[in-house]
Figure (tube, rainbow, N blue to C red):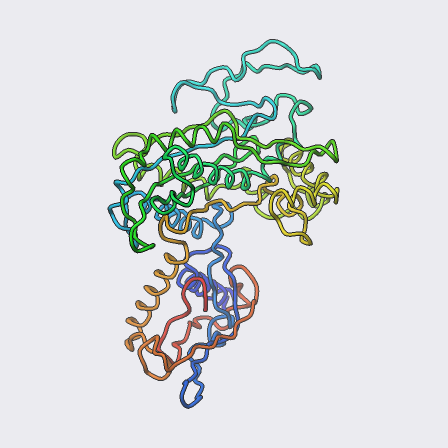
Length: 477
């Protein structure tokens, strides 16, 4: 009875420590070690914080995983940060002046081309009644029905599945995913050249007057191909390079939108042909392109766009998160209960990635450095997509690092206030004093929640550090 009671108390202590230190992260990283403060003048060293006296002798930090299927708590924080990054670039705030809300801006959706017919939900309007998926009565060259008369619901597992797997161009699909980041860069560069030509300027002359910035989020569709959603904003150039001033009168939303439409219809990048060692393929955008101005009211308001882009960043490639981590081998893939289409996409990545000649040519086209694991193998769990899920121009808005740094400072301020000593170092000086240097010695000690055996005696709680500081904040000891 006493042992059972002790274990219950230990579990409560573990849960309380987990919530307090790791912010509710379900898969925190455990670290062992300490942080010392060194006096620059005398060389004296004082221990500022140590994990030795904490339950289990470890410090928990968040995993910071963006996927909701992996960690709901860290995913929610990531989504809020992403929303703030997008929104501050449209409406101002978080180190961005409010005047950017009057700058020309576009909301852009770029899609992948068709690599074969797939099951889809067709309806009139966002919440309209579903219509027949693909009303055709013919057969494909492989003898399978070329149409589908079902009315698929939102949760139908067949959505995104090809009507005929043999008709679907799997090599073309994974190659397109691999080169989508390069295609986006080519589109950005060509848009800048097109705007300069429309204004009668050189590119260098355009850059002296106008800066075109963006933020881009990536959506993985059910068919295994990525879509890109971007906000493009036009700023003027002030005397100070860091100023975000209004652009000249000729740089209108319509001008930039017309130039972007023309570029998207023509831009392409070259990829190696998997069927012909000497041949090449042209990688282009799909025909479904949506470019619309950002308005103060209506369906493209700043808040709606920020929510729309942020929601895609926490989703997994497949439902249930089966491909949240890299696939190490085909044997590893065989153990995953994937549906046939996703399995075929990953298999295609491995088939093409193990061809050294083709993999090297594709990595060269994608701008990847040689000597590393081929991109198709490294990113097979993302169907070849190896880019970041959200990217932005440097001048568009704030960064994840700035937002996380502000949270760390806030957490330390609160910890110092609760300790009663304020935010001071081990020598009693104000935090950040130039006469004190912090030296941390930390090592990885595992991942996950503390177990009963890690806690130690029941009721053991985290001690107060010599400097009167609380446990390290999120992200670093």
